[in-house]
Length: 308
Image 1 (cartoon, rainbow, N blue to C red):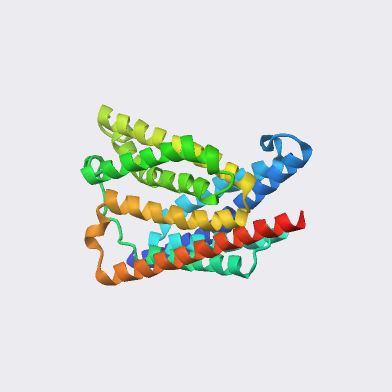
Image 2 (cartoon, rainbow, N blue to C red):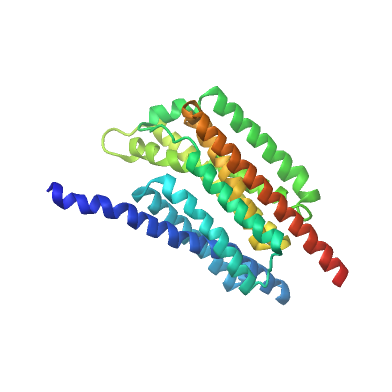
């Protein structure tokens, strides 16, 4: 029996990596197809909600996220997560072909630096301590440090959505990126907590009203976060290049998720000096990449003004 189970244990990570790679390519096409649908509907003078290409991009987003969920269940997260950078690079290539969005040399370099820095940050990020029960999850969620962080994020989101986005959203790509990325602070922890809450709420044995309330709360948080992200992602695609938005969004989303997970699961207590320096280097690399993408965007806007 031991001999029979060994090939299975070896093949599972390979299968998970394969799913992650395919999902990354599917996710990379999401923003490109949605942007194409927005442009097609704009030319027709209608809503992108009636465009089949836009719905194709939305379907790719759903399939890609399902693929990511499956990959995380059959392969280590430290291997699966960095593969998301492949989607950014694939999206940039696809955008130059379908949307004719050509990055200059600074934009291409910025895109690569964003991906490389994100991979370094993910690899050296502290790993989560295993949370195996709903009670332990509730204890982590009620930790004063995480509660303060969550309230700060909510306050910042209200400021961005209510005041900053209407005034500067269409002119500054970082506004929509910040909104979508900060929502990741709630999306990922909610996804991780749903499974634990569901075990006590719907599993074998007597059901717990407290577990059911936690499940409904996490599900509602997840749904609201995804819907708001979805809305502002499309708002961003109406105004900015898809490949540029995807690269910056990948960087900031990854960073906010790591911070939220570190606070919720107290990962920062296991952070070593070596990992800290490596994360600092990865963060610096990402920042340089974002700056180069911003310079590339400004150069593109200036060039369009001169040609018009």
